[in-house]
Image 1 (cartoon, rainbow, N blue to C red):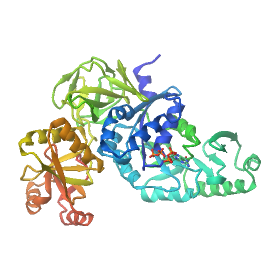
Image 2 (image 1 turned 135 degrees about the vertical axis):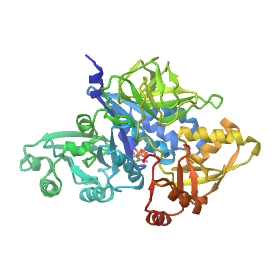
Image 3 (image 1 turned 90 degrees about the horizontal axis):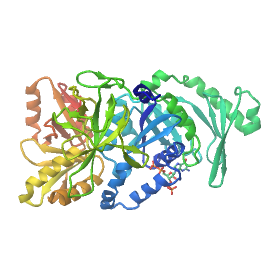
Image 4 (image 1 turned 180 degrees about the vertical axis):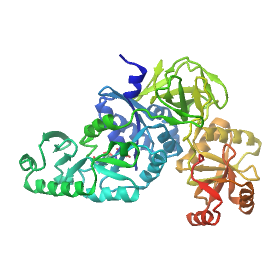
Length: 527
Ligand code: G4P
C-alpha cells in the first residue's frame, strides 16, 4: 500500500550539472527513455534544436511556455519516482540555473571525457558544494579518441576539490573502446557498435584473473585493464556511501550517452544510492520530510507568455507533509492564504493537474504576482527555509530610461522581473539609478523586450565594468558606514535593501578583502 512514508522513500529529486555540449540533453533523453517517459529518441533533442537554432531571443521567449514543461521532468523507474530538474545551459544560463540546484537532493555531473572539467561545471559545482549535495559523475563520450581516465580523475580532485571513487573503468577509448569493467559488481560490460547502432552486453567474471577476460577482450586489453585496476585500487579507496552522501566523494562512471552505453548502469546505481528527500534547514528548526504538516519553498518563477496577463507559475519544492489540491496554505512572508485549485505536476514533457504530491516533488502553482523566489509556504507554521540565496551576477549594466514619463512602469517592471529571477536589480546607494546584473548576456535582451512589451517602458543598457557583487557583513555599523562613504560609486542595494559592494576587478576585490578584515564579503545574499 502506498503510504506517505513509502512515497517519500521512493523519490529521487536531482539535477544535471555540465558544461554546454558535454552531453546533458543526450543523457536526459536516454534516462527518460529508460523511464518510459518518452518513447522516441530525439524528443528532447528536437526541442533543444528548435531552441538553439536561432539566437533570436524573441524565439526563446516564444519557447518559454515549452520550457516550463521541461523545467521538471518526472518519471518512474523500477518503482522509484524520479524528478529531474532542468538546469539550462547555453544562452539560457542564468541565476535560475544556480537556484534550481537549491531544490535538488543530489546531482549528476556530466563531463566530456575528451575535454575534462570546463568552466560552467565549476560554477555549478560551487553551488552544490555550498549545500554538500551528493554528486555522481558520468564521464561521457568514451567512444571518442583522446580520453585519459586517470588524468580526468586527477583533474576532478585538483580542480573541483572532491575525492573520487571510480565505480567503472573504461577499456580503452575511441575506435578501440571495448566497454567498461564494473568494479563494484565484478562484471565486464561490453560495447558493440554497429554503425549507428550500439548495444551493451554483460559478462560476469569471478575476478580479474578469470581467463574469460582474455576470451572476451583479447590479451592486450586484458593486460591493460589488469594494470589499470591494480593502479587505481592502489590510489583510490573503495566507494564509501556515507562520504558520497556528505558530498565529500563522487562515484565516477564512464560511458557514452549517445550510444546509450553506461546509462542504465548509472541509473541503477543512482536509484539505489542517491538520497531520498532530505531534511532541510529553516531559521526556526530542521524540517523533516516525514513531518506531518506540509511545508515547501519557491525556487523559481516562470512568467506566462501572454503579455496581457501577468500570470506566473511558481515552482514549489515540497519539503514535508502532503500537498493536497485546494488545501489552504499560507505564504509566510505575506501572511496571505492560497488555495491552489490547479496545481500542476510535471511528468516528462507534459503538465498535468494533480491532487496530491509528496516531499521531493515539484508542483507548479499559479500566481498573479504575490509570490517571490525564496518564499516559504506551509499550512500554518511560521518557518523560513534557508539556502535559497541570490548568487553574484557576472555582467552588470546601467539602465537608461528612454521615456522619463514612464519611470514608474520601468521601476515596477524591473522589480517584478527581479522577483522572477530573470536578473538581479540593484539600486545605487544615494541615488535612484538602477543597475541590472545577470550571469548570461542574453538576459539583457530578454529584460529590454519584456519591459517594453509587458510594462510599456523603453530602456537602454549602458555597460558597467563590474565583475562581481559582494554582500557585506560587519559587526560594527561604523566600519560599514566608513567603507560605504569612501566607495559610494561602488555601493548598491539589492532587491531586499541589503548592501552590496560592486568589484571592478578580481585584483581590486582581493585587495579590499585583505585591507578590510572587519568586513565579510559574501558571494551570495545569504550568510
Ligand atoms: P548538452 O545538452 O550538454 O549541451 O549536450 P548534447 O547532449 O546536446 O550533446 C552535445 C553534442 O555531443 C551532440 O552533438 C551530441 O550528439 C554529442 N554527444 C553526446 N553524447 C555523446 C557521446 O557519448 N559520444 C559522442 N561521440 N558524442 C556525444 P552535436 O553534433 O552537437 O548534435 P547532434 O547533431 O548529434 O544532435
